[in-house]
Structure formats: structure tokens, C-alpha cells
Amino acid sequence: MRTKIFLPLFFSTVFSLQNIFAQTYYVPMTGSLGPFNACSGIFYDSQLDPSVNYTNNQNGTVTICSALAGQYVSITFSSMALADNTDILRLYSGAGTGGPLLQIFTGPINTTSFSSAVVSQDVSGGCITGHFQTGSAGVAAGWNATIACQLTTGVSEPQSSNNSNIAILHNTDGSTSFQFYSNTSSAYAISIFSADGKNISQKNYSLGAGQHQISLSTQNLPQGIYFCRVEGEGINKSFKFIK
Image (tube, rainbow, N blue to C red; front, side, top):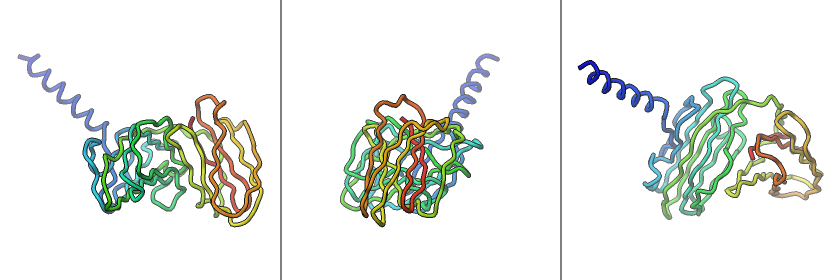
């Protein structure tokens, strides 16, 4: 009798613990949720189910912050399906949409080919804010992603008041690039550093005014965490990427 009573209680307790630690987080159809503190769990669109399509005319945000001091939140996608170019998921560093833009997913897209995580740059709380908006032309399955936390590296990230025009792009083919707007023609130096601060490479560019997208040369780098520094007219910015 004692065994028969113990086993159901034991498995019930384990199941409850799994539910506690395997939390799900999602972008609401409208409004804002969070901030939530988490270092594990699943990140979904509003339907909480990759087999169910999101809806038209959504406009919501959610903020997920690190549950561990000194660590950053990271989000790793395993699938992404957006119907058309009016369906956009933006991921910002920090507790709100005013921080640096980390990643943009714009439809049409339907892929399971991801090899890198989107990692916060927010040194105060290690947060990422997701903003999802949809149009009215069509719907798709949305996304499935996992949440984790990782240690900071101690490499400083210089800031300036003109860094909001940089968008970091972790592309679906595993490469990393960034977009930025230059007000004038200027020379730019782009350097890659290892996690321990060693300068691995530096390239110099002379660019005109306008929008630019530059791919990083990472083919010969081993897997790991790296920093890229962009220096030029009105820009002095370092961002982290994972190969």
C-alpha cells in the first residue's frame, strides 16, 4: 500500500516540477507582457503552438530578462514561418523597444535552418524584448525557440549616442552581418575580437552616405563567442555574435 501511494505522489511531484521549470513565453496579440525572469523555457508566437497559425493584425511585445545576475538571455530559434513582408518579428536588446535592434525576421520565410542564437547586449538586466506585428494579407505558423542564459565575457562594449542606427543580423545561413546608416561619406574600421579581447582581424572601409550592409568574414573562425567593433563617423559600437 505504501508503494502504491508513493509512486503517484512521486510522479505527480516530478510532473509539477517540469511544468515549473519548462515555462512558455509568447508575444501577445496586442499590448505588452513582462518583464519575465528566465534562463530556460520555450518562446512562441501568440498561439503557443507551432502547428497553429498566428492571426492577422497583431501588435504585441514581450520582455524576457536573465534570471541570473551577470548573465545574458539568449534565444535560439528552431523554426520560423512568416506569411509575407507585413509580418515582422523584431528582437531588441533591453527591457523595451528603445534598445539596439538585435534581429529582424520578415516574411515570407519558412525555415528550420538556424545555427546561432540571438543574444542580449543589455548589461544591466540581460534582457531581450520581442515585438511582433502582422498585416492582413495572410498568416503562417510563427516560430519555436528556446531560452537560455550565458555568462558575460568581461569584454567592454563602448557606447555612444549615435548607435541606434545599427541593426545586427544573424542570418538563416549561419552568417552574421550588420546594417547601419551613414549621414556622410566616411572611413570605417571593423574589427573582430575573441572573447578574451584578442584582436583577430580588422578591415577598413571607405563608404558613402546612405544605408549599408556588411557581412563579417567568419568562415575561418572556430565556433565560439566573438565581438565586432565598428568605428567611424558618428559610430563607436561593439556587438557580440556567436558562431
